[in-house]
Structures are given as structure tokens and as C-alpha cells.
Length: 246
Ligand SMILES: Nc1ncnc2c1ncn2[C@@H]1O[C@H](COP(=O)(O)OP(=O)(O)OC[C@H]2O[C@@H]([n+]3cccc(C(=O)O)c3)[C@H](O)[C@@H]2O)[C@@H](O)[C@H]1O
Ligand SMILES: Nc1ncnc2c1ncn2[C@@H]1O[C@H](COP(=O)(O)OP(=O)(O)OP(=O)(O)O)[C@@H](O)[C@H]1O
Ligand SMILES: [Mg+2]
Image 1 (cartoon, helix red, strand yellow):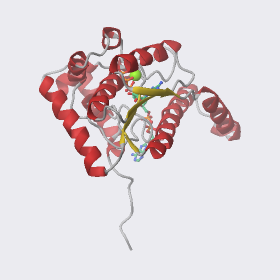
Image 2: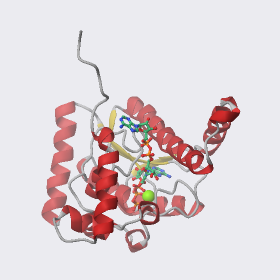
Image 3: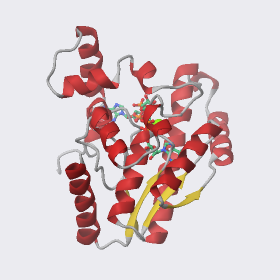
């Protein structure tokens, strides 16, 4: 794992060198993926790395966890509270829809959740432009393969260092990097609505997705869920479709 840490840190340093930017930044949620990225960017750019905490009508415990991550990593940080912006924007959007266009409650919850992820992306890019930093994403191999991220939200980033690491490998990296146990041991959540956990929403588990990615046998019902998610989200891993030139 130590070798992997060094390889990823070197890769991040190379990206700074090749692109000519001044540093790297990440949204810090209080979850394990962003905790690992915060530590990696701090090592790659000790004096020019930034963690941004962005509560958005979130559970207050997320912010406490995010602060613990920032403190343990020793990374510079700032907090931008997006709750009011989100309320105003979502209320204004839905008030403009015609009655017959009003979404069902599940679709509405998803639209609301994805708006939060995209407000975070907009915030990160506003700060990145100011600092001349790159925005570093946190998607791991399991999230990337299943498309379990918001297109142009948490998926809207410049670098994706963890994209070949299974969730299990992210946990191992977190231990080596000194991420607090409380963060390592909690259930992965997008925190996009009260009580959301990744594994409940997906209907399968990261352990099973990791096994699938390593070519190991998994139950047929999980295989079906994973392949369906992968197929349905192919568009998120490609650039926008364009017609042939004529
Ligand atoms: N075939 C196609 N070709 C091109 N574009 C296509 C398309 N199908 C849908 N689209 C477009 O994509 C949109 C749907 O994609 P998207 O907006 O991403 O939305 P969607 O995939 O429906 O939802 C995002 C999922 O990611 C989860 N998430 C989000 C953020 C963070 C985390 C986390 O783990 O922390 C998890 C979230 O809980 C939810 O399950 C559609 O509204 C449409 O605009
Ligand atoms: N409240 C938040 N403040 C700042 N960034 C956030 C916040 N919520 C989500 N993000 C960003 O969106 C990313 C995607 O969230 P995701 O839940 O997949 O990762 P995580 O929270 O780091 O880890 P876990 O999957 O274990 O919850 C986060 O890693 C982080 O960069
Ligand atoms: Mg999370």
C-alpha cells in the first residue's frame, strides 16, 4: 500500500507539472473517498492544496467528520454553506414547472440530490479559477464502473486518481494515510438525503462490486444489478454525443 500511495502522489505531482497549475483541491464530505484524496493532494502539494467543505442541508455530523479529516490531514480548508442557495434554486425551478410536469416524489428527490452535487461542482470550479488549482475527484473503481455519481456533479472534475482502486483498496489506503477510524468504519453515503446509504440505494454492496471487478464469482442477482447500472450509465463515461459533420 505504501508503494501505491507513493505512486499516486507522484502521479498527482506530475499532473501539476504537466498542466502548470499552482495546486490541487477537493471537496471534503466527511466520507472515506474524499479523506483519502485530501491526504494524497496534501502530500503532492503540501503548500498549495485545499479541502472545501460544502454542507447543503446536510446532516451536521458530516461537517464534524469533514473537519476531523481536514485536521488529521493538516490540509488548508474552507467552508462554503450551500443550503440557502440550494433552497432558493430548487424552489424557483419547481415553481416554474407546469402542473403536469411535476415529478413524482422519487424523481423529485433525485433531481434535488443531483442539484446539490452540481452546486458543489460549481463552487469548486469558482475557487479553482481563483487559485489556479485543479479539481480532484474522488470516484473509486466501483463507483466509476457502476456510474454511481452525478454527471457533471461529483463526476465533473479534472483528475480521478482513485478510479482504479476498489472500495476495499480505498479503505487500505485510508489506513496507511492515517484517516481517522471513525471515518473508515462508517457506512458510505452520498449524504444527498436523510438516511441515504450507497448500498441501500444500489441494492448491492461494495464488497460484492469489488469481487465482480476482480473477476470473482458473485450471486446472479448482484451481477444483474451491477451490469444494468454499468450499461445504463455508459453515457457518463463518454464525452457528449455529437452528429457527424455534414
Ligand atoms: N443514454 C443517455 N445518453 C446521454 N445522456 C443521458 C442518457 N441517459 C440519461 N442521460 C442524462 O443523464 C442524466 C442522469 O444522470 P445523473 O444526472 O448523473 O443522475 P442519476 O444517474 O439518475 O443519479 C445519480 C446517482 O448517483 C448517486 N450519487 C450522486 C452523487 C454522489 C454519489 C456518492 O456516492 O456520493 C452518488 C445518486 O444517489 C444517484 O443514484 C439524465 O437526466 C440525462 O440528462
Ligand atoms: N458536504 C460535502 N462537502 C464537500 N464535498 C462533498 C460533500 N458531499 C459530497 N462531496 C464531494 O462529493 C464526493 C462524492 O461523494 P461520495 O459520498 O462518493 O464520497 P465520500 O463521501 O468521500 O466517501 P463515501 O463514499 O464513503 O461516502 C465526495 O468525495 C466529495 O468530494
Ligand atoms: Mg459520502
